[in-house]
Image (cartoon, rainbow, N blue to C red; front, top):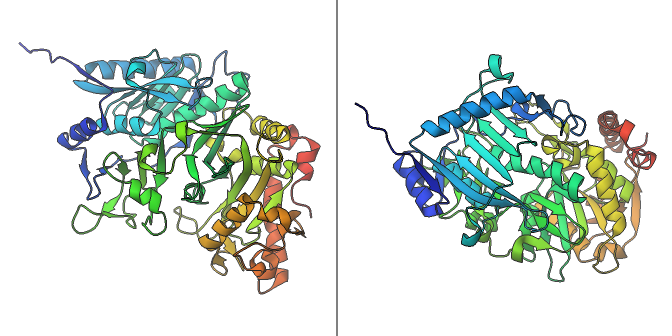
Length: 524
């Protein structure tokens, strides 16, 4: 006669307990810095082709369906949800966490996260806002179930393969199975906010980092992976609001999260001291390798993946913004790593150009970043976060334009928008050289302090960009990319090629963009 084992539901365990559970189960180990190290298994990154939205009465006519927002029928979702609930009920123990998405009481959502592994629950503790003890056991607006052992049957559930992440806006539920990669948890909630905030509250959700200067001036940093979004927003002279996801409301910019999820590849104390110092007890390292002592992390080790990551609560950073909120932005930076060496290291955008480049979301992948890439490849991700946008990109761009028009309450009421190239100069990847981080920091500092408001501007043909004629602590010769190339004719050919790539990409949005935005793009 078998004796039933009483199920243990671990509610809101502190990080130390979650570390203890992880180690005792053989699911992780401590590094020399005190951070918990885990391996996420088969999936070491998000799987955007396996992310679905339930198509029903709420979403049928509002979601921008296509390759990014893949529909799934409610019946398939219900079958997978039922399978997940049955699995959870049969487990000896699982983990539950109360959390909040959005550092604004007016716009936040209450979240309850159910996880199979203790370190997944620790990730939720790190990355979402942490309610006070009195707020725990609250009624959740949204529920997230993350159980890697629950796999889909593509023949039955109409999925592409065994792993899945499904958002159901009617049920206000996200189910994640077949993958243990924690980024699926946070990006699921980000996708939900990207749908809810613009449609219900006129709040612009943004895939950006944000910080605040000593005068209270807020800055936003948009950029795809590898452009410097986290690095450049971690500034010892400015307080960090957050490094990845924010909302732009009527009177404030607020963080969606309560922590940071940073890449650690090639991390060092000299290059990124704040992030390096944050990797201590309470931080969660994913898929990193070790030096010979099997305890000290080797941040150059890519044997598991190049997408090595660390999550840590934002209070691991000393210089943070109180309550993760700031005033409306004074400066907005669009970061791109242009491996073609065409775009200037800094240029000032008009509102229409800002909307054009926001919709475009350009950067370039270089050789070595992904299997099969042997030369630079232009990459366009609308609004610098296409995989997380349930609505059409022009809806977010229109909202951005309206926010810029409304100005801000700081200084002269103007919002400056800058395009920053952290990529190549003097030629393309393989010929030119990467822009020095010290110069990029100097240009951003000059923009933030208003020094670039006092200089004249030249015009860059083809892209019609306004380039400052000088910038403190930056050689003038670097400011116009055409002048840095040994052969100006070769630059013109490369610039024309990139301009055509922009134009081809924008054909996807032209029908829903107004004439002013279309005219703000490259000209031949």
